[in-house]
Image (cartoon, rainbow, N blue to C red; front, side, top):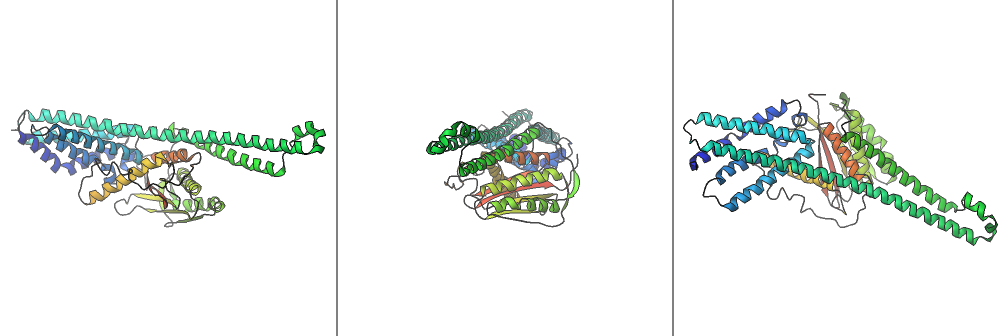
Length: 442
């Protein structure tokens, strides 16, 4: 067994060099042309739980001491799993794909290994039994982090798929209800025919030329139009999502005035808000020149605004945009806020719930980073979404909510953008998308 001082010295060195390790890792990520998503993030968001993973490893070295109990090692393992899972959650929210997640963690591994080599060179008299143990511990630590992070990522993909299934089941139920109401209308027509003695002689002609009342026919036509339109939009969304998931969409970048674009989008959606007696207001700096894909920015905004209108019964929807500013000067944002029931009313949306938890954790990480504190996801962060107030009023989600949100999420991934959500029961929901002001690649 190596001397306790040797393990403690390595842990202290890593703690002291943590900012340098993170900077080396950030340089490696931003210079890798295959990791375009990471290069668009500010430092705090890119680092997210990596400082915690390093701190976990420093504690792991201490746990290798004989004096450490099995209970403390088990607690440390749970902490690592929480931090690594939170890392996967944030990378999913930020638009990374699985290949990017594993590649950036591989570069993180390289940077730590280089730092360990540097430590060995600077300490030639170090007990020879120390570093093999440290390297083996790091291999186990990094492997566990990769496993937990990617597992969280796949679980989120499964959660998203469940949202799609729920939407398709709702569409099938809508068809079933339409068929049932159609049958009821024809029963009413048949009853009218039986009650009208003068029509009996013309039963055959009546059956072929529809004797439904004008009121019944109007009800059926409105029902048919509403359901056909809903199904048409759902099928369009399913097709669009399939193209995005199949990698058939490409971003087409150009210099655009997004203020003019968003103003045009909101003007075009005013009638949808007015039909539900809602207000739709919009504001932001004009002009706002950025590099981006105007078609996809338009699609994202339309999806979020129409979804907000659908679930808001009173009040209205507000769209704002602007520059990131502060610690995020290289990005700009779109924000869509509604006065609806919030995602915690009724069944809600599992996809939106996962995005909201990631948003809560990101806010905590940023706040702690400003105070020089490393955030761990072993307690309140991991349970951030578990203690939200729940509004028990029944809310029936319409078909396409999960698919529409998935489309926005996929478009964000395509544009290296981050989607965040904040929702309060009975007060409303806020979606915010942060996009790069310029791109380093196509």
